[in-house]
Every structure is written in structure tokens, then in C-alpha cells.
Length: 245
Length: 238
Image (cartoon, rainbow over all chains, first blue to last red; front, side, top):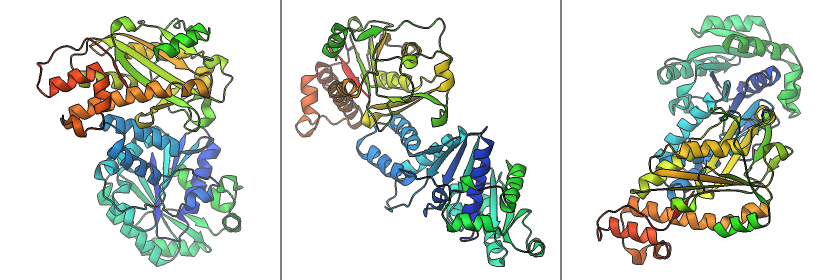
């Protein structure tokens, strides 16, 4: 199962992804790949994990391989398998892959295609994959979400965030026709806000997360969400995940 | 390479591993750090992989040798790793044969054992799961699986494998033969892929001039002599 968490910037999707990673780490029985697809790298920070290398580093090395190293496509395929493994930061049953910030704009279609296939192959070896997608619809447009099974759209109670989620859903449905989509309303201070969102959108609201001082404190103090104690927000996220995964 | 093997053998450090009673089960395994019983050739440590081929008479068919501790003796953690695969056979088409032999090495996957290769660095990085280690997995099993897979390649008539797990210095001593083997392969790949026989401008001229096989391939590809089975000399790569 590949789960992507997407939404407008600033709605708390990285926190949702971090709490999802916490749930998978606590379960312990399933090997899970966590992909920090936001170039800002917030998820790695939220999990207290420090990636040594990023996918962008792998991409750069592969470009070098194409130019000077690997002798043919098979060599390139085994190289990427090695380099991706090297880029994983592991903790228990979790392995984190950070996308990193692209630094060069060159077009290396061969590398990008092989890389995308390799990530799909890597994800297939894990029981679960959770992707913290880049804010907005850019990655949806670039078909990054093309192979996901479920897109969890995160919005706060603002209509702007809900409309962004609708756009992602509309574009994503054409890119990943088989994927499921659901809306998670975050930072709810009053249950009535959830009803307002329900009334304003056709998206299926799969759950809501209350504003939670424990989550806020972990965020403000840069504590690892893998160590987050049970709290109303984590309970709500766990329940939504249980219904999806 | 041969001199190095003789030296280790003379020092009593090289031993032949006996194959297990039955082949280790095949399977593709993802071994995470927490499940790892022994890591070999971690990217931050010493690692080298060599694939070389030559005359059947130079290969001791089926032999798996080891310098250093086997999996059960290593005590866990992470250790250096060198893997030398030698094959012998009749190679009419060196390019296709090389790729088939190389793919046979890449395609050898065992249950509870993950292996990753980076051809440009000639490194191989393996993890043995705790379960496999406790279940008696040995480098003899890996060697036997590699040999079995290699012998599915039609022109391969014999194969042997040497592993080095002793210390960083020993693995690093493989670097020179590994570099030589890499250059031979690169020269051959260039000949086949680029079909450019302007030796005066080629960076592999020195390699081709010193390796009889490469000169023959070059001459044949350049059309100066008719195709013929390759019999003399040897090549190597990875």
C-alpha cells in the first residue's frame, strides 16, 4: 500500500505524515518506507531522523554514472538499487528516503524514468509506504503520485485549503485513476467546523484531527514525533490510518 | 590475483569452504538494519567485487574459498568484504558472454540475504538477516549459489568464488587487480558499444595493447580478421 499525504502548504500534512510514521513504528510488524517528498525536508526533521544522502544526491550520482560509470542499463539498474539503499535512513522497522532539493535543472529523462521505476520497486519491497508530498499540486502534475493507492488530502478548516484539496483530487484522479481519495480535516477547534467543510465539498471526509497542545509542543520544541505520547490528535490520526491501511 | 591467492594460501589464511547439505533457499530479501545479523562491505567500509574469466584450466571448478571469518564466526556487526568470481569457458562472443555472466551474478538472490552492487565503484554490500545467520547461513551457500547461477550461462564450463572478510587491508589489496579487470571490461564495452577503432585517440589503447584478447576482439570487430572463438588470454571486470 502506498499512501500519499497531500494538501495545501501549512495545513499540517507533515505532522500527519509524522504521526502516521509513529503509528507504523509502534505497530512494528510491518516494514515501512517513509518518503519525505517535500524538498524542504520537514518530515525527516519531524521524525528526528537525519538523512545523510537524499534522492537528489542519488540522481546526481546516477547522471554521473550515465556519463562515465555504468556500462549499460543493467549496470544502471543495480547501481540505483545500491544508491537508494545507501540513501535510506533506518530506525527500527522504518526506512526514510528524503527527496532533497533539486539543484540542477538539466533534463535527464533516462535517469528520471529509471529512478521513478526504482522507487516503485523499492516501495514494493516494503509492507507500507507513506509519502509526505510537496505542498500544492506540482508533484501531482509531474505524475509523482502516479503509483499511489490512496491520497490522504489534508486541509485545515479554511475553504482555501479545502479548494486546494479538491484541485489535487481532480488532477490526481486523472493521474492515478485507481487511487482512493479522502479528506482529513486538521486543527479542528470546534466539531461544527467539520460539518461546515462537509457541507462545502464533495470530497469524502474520512476524519478530523483536533487542535492538540501536545502536538503543538512537539512541533515548537522540534521533538521527534516518533516519541509523541498518545493524545487526542494521534488517536484521531491512528483511527483514520487504520481505516485506510 | 593469482599471486595474491598463492600468498594467502601459503600463509595458511585461505581455506576451502565445504558446501552445505542442501542449497540455501533462493529468494529476494529486504534486510533492514534492525534485522541484520551481519553486514558485509558496508559503503563506509572496505568492499570490492571482481568478476574475471579465462581459461578453464585456470579455474578450480566449484571451489569456494575464504580468507577471514565465515558468517557464524564473524560475531555480528559490520565487516569488510571482497568477492572474486572466476569463470572459465568457451566465449565466442565476449560482449554477450560478459553480460550474461555479469547478469548471473546480479541475479543470485538468497533468502535472508540482501546484496547490492555498485559496478562503477566495484563494490558489493550485503546483509545477512539474524534469522539466516542463526539458521546457519554460510558464505559457502552464497558461493555455491553464485556458481550454480553462473553455470546456467551456456559458455561457462567452470566457476569458482573467493571471499575475503578478514580485514580492510586484505580487501584493499584486491583493488589493483580489480582496477585492471575494470579497465579490460571498459575497453571491451567501448569497442562493442562505440565501434570506434581509432586507437590513437582511445584512452584504452594501453589496455588493449597489453591484453591479447582485447587486441583480437578489436581486430575482429574492425574487420581485419574473420570471427573466431576466443581461446587465449583472459579478461575481467565488475
